[in-house]
Amino acid sequence: MTLSHVPHELAEEFPDDHAILHALKVADGNFAHLSDTYHEINRRIHRIESLIEPATDETLNELRRQRVVLKDEIAANIAAQKRDVA
Image 1: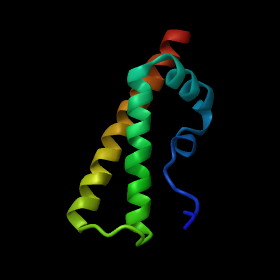
Image 2: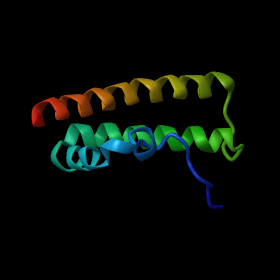
Image 3: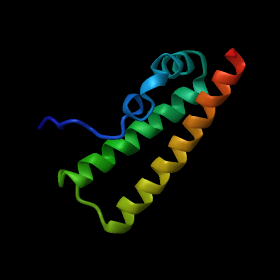
């Protein structure tokens, strides 16, 4: 079964920072891990919300909290990269 559009992908969340996202993934192993973890959690949330994967409300809410924390960390990395380049 093919999933439809997965909302909240990083390219969608940070549309003006595609080049920075790519550069950080390539140059920074920690950022690459952070990004991969975000994608795994985001896709799991999408599967749960699409009723493909069963989960409790508590599990879904915890995954959503984790996604917010990861997104904040990613945003901080992007901001730091922009400061370093400026």
